[in-house]
Length: 216
Ligand code: DX5
Ligand code: ZN
Image (cartoon, rainbow, N blue to C red; front, side, top):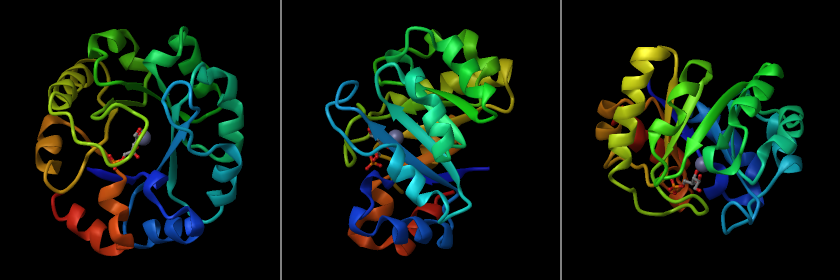
């Protein structure tokens, strides 16, 4: 099963609540929430109070993508804000194994994200304990960037590891995903597709989701 995870980074923040409700109404599966600290990535987005304020508007899974340094400092806060999946970056955490266990101790799902230049091999030994791996197909920090093609090879590598060590592993791809590359992403093994600008462009959420889901 393929799941669509719209990134609210591209939503209209002046009516964020309405946009979040629209995602559920028009068939999105997961809400992807991009938290940026201006240190790990050269941009600042939004944080805990914003997540809290939209939590009760939808039953959809909240997939919180932490693009922040030393994310373990804030795990409990994001759990309390309503996260169902917490993704930390390999590059941002010196003690990933500990952080993954810490995330899971709250009963939420744990995921690790890899920047484009980070090899999949780095997380090979963590695969059995992870709920999801996030392959970045742009350099994190901004929506609307161009898809990096070699991310497909990395998805295939994660898929091979999942077949060996963790059949339930979710494989998420994030950055530059749109109707033009979904078929390839699917056949490479991705099963959670993040899409920001492709879902929110022109404010036509319903139509955009229809166009994307035609490729599933
Ligand atoms: C980038 C974020 C993405 C971003 C995707 O740092 O992690 O989730 O919002 O946006 P698009 O789909 O426009 O590339
Ligand atoms: Zn993201």
